[in-house]
Every structure is written in structure tokens, then in C-alpha cells.
Image (cartoon, rainbow, N blue to C red):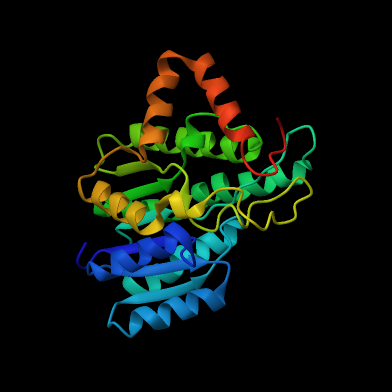
Length: 268
């Protein structure tokens, strides 16, 4: 990773923050993007104190012009892009019959279109460098999760887009990684949207028992170094993806029962 130019979206917290820190520690030059400039600037100060080469850019990936400016800022600062990590994402928790459709639109705009926009404007440089496009997806991109229709739909869409991108560029040397963590200790559930679009607030899961963002970030970086196509994390996640191929109806029931046990589950 030494000397590589890396863009990480959603870098102000969770997996994105851990990725930015680990890329920088490994010698990469990191452009960190997020909606919260205050959090980015604090992270930037912390990393610059360690003599890491980082650059903070405020960007809302659901806005195409912000994505374009993010890539342009990276080019102006460093001249190119070697690795684009599409990590920015939001979640939700509500039954489809109850949810405001604007919630689903918000999720698609951030999780899916944010990936499309950033990849579109970075692609010429990535092709030139035979670089890497990474999508931080989810097990929800393999198996629909009840109470999270918009989240699962956006991750299925992201994975379909990235898989097609990989196939289109098989002979051009472009590396495309779809990384699918299972439940990870981060603030994505705290900021998940409720049925009316308000933030959920408190996580329904025991965050202390989940894989940490730091572990996820290291595994993603290792997968990039080895130019892997897919990365599925946690034992539970791997089992769901494997068993769903052969016993989808059984997994439907298992997923339903598991999610119904969440605190204040929207369904029983």
C-alpha cells in the first residue's frame, strides 16, 4: 500500500475510519470523505500528528456533484487514484408496509448511487493504473433481511453493479472487490432510519459481541492486496451465504426468527 492513492468514503466513523487509519499506517496517501467535516478534520489532525499523508474532503455521496468534486479534489491533490473504497452507507429498520418511501430512496441514493457516482468519475484513473474498486456491501446483499428492505435492496444493487463492472473490464486489469461484513461494531445501526426517516438512535444489537471495525478494515485491505473478488466475513455470514444456495426456504425462517429476537423488533 506504500505510496498508493486511496479514496475512502464514509471515513468519519466505523469501518471507513478504521480503513483510513490502516491505509495511512501502511504508507498510503488517503483522501477521506464524509458528510461530517468536523469529524473528518479531527481524524485528519490525529493522523497528521503521526506524519501520515491524509486529506479530508466533505462530500455527501448521494449527491452526484459532490462525488465528482471528491474525485477532482483527489486528482488536484495527488494526481491520480489507485484505490476507491465505496464505504459510505446508511441503514434502516422498519417494515415495508409501514415505511415512508423516501426512506428507501435515501438508502438507494447513498448506498447504491453513491457507489455508482464515485466509481464513474474515478474509473478513468483506476483503469489507467489497473487499480481497485471496492464496495463495502453486506450479507444483506446476499440475503434479504426483514425490516431492512431498502438496505438489502441497495446492497443487492451495489453487488450487481460491481460484478458487472468487473466482467466488463476483465481484459483491462481493473480489480473489483465486493466486501460483505456480517454484523460489525459500528454506528450504522445508531444512525439507521426508522419508518418516518428519523434516526433509530440506540442499536438493537449487543455491539460488544460483534466483529470490530478494525478487524474488518484489515481483512478488506488484505483482500485488496491479494486482489480478491469477494470477501464474506464472520462465521455466521459465511454460513448464511453458503446455506442459502442450497436451502433458501430454511434460511428464510432462520433469518426471520433471528431478526425477530432483536430488541423492539418491528415484527414477531
